[in-house]
Image (cartoon, rainbow, N blue to C red; front, side, top):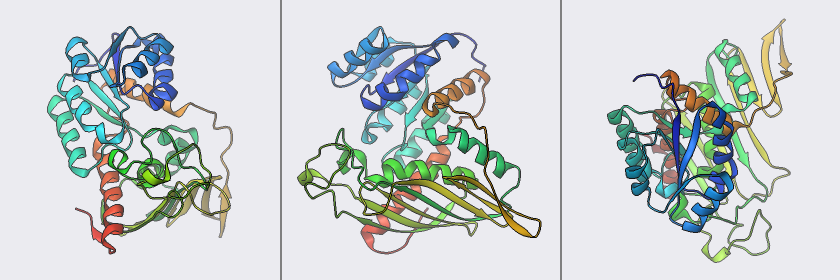
Length: 351
């Protein structure tokens, strides 16, 4: 694929909260580097018009297929609800655009495979928006891993727990459109980060449980208002994942859980050392002892903007996708396995 040096034209599909909150501001930061959002699309015309007005985008569409026909786009950013990731992504790739799609990649393993196949066939880059990788602390952890500080990695614990954090807007409480609750919404972030630090081992088996005990009640507190009668996702999901190489991950995610405090962290353990993301700590075996090291002067980045910058760099320099669809497929297999195991009440094999 030839390197791109000219102006890159971007189109947004899905112009609501996540697009206006972080994606469009991130693209604006790149405007001086020859990147411009030329069109926004949303099935709700007023939402698309609002995004265009706020971010000075010249073209507004309600049909992404029309946008892809009329605009010669270099990049398409898919920010639709989870149930509508596959269609726009595949269409944009087939139209010749590189695509970044919000996490999770899709609703099912089959959809992820179709999206990867479309990217390969079109010879375009596909990236999944896993912004947690781009935090400065995450980059520091990756350097520690790459230096051999962990040795053989064999165990990890990943937590994305909210005490009272049910998002009462959008489709977050609608399983049919979202695919699940906290595990697929915020658990996917900590799972991706953990797998990335472990080198993305292939999963073999998963045992999962889910609970819906709080969201269907009134007056429990949260991040917004929702109708308990239409709350169809879990409050809590957890799973034990066994990898083909013998390693394992214990993962848990909640929107509402009676715990002392919120928690978002990963802990990865190896034969030579370990790491914890919060508080950021590197564990080393040295001097006939075990030492905790705390990195200093990491700096700060806006992780959503940084992931877009890295995607543009990959396109211009013909580098691998910063978060390739093949890795997101592994993540999706685990998420699907957790929900399947919880439904069946037994451990399931991940193919």
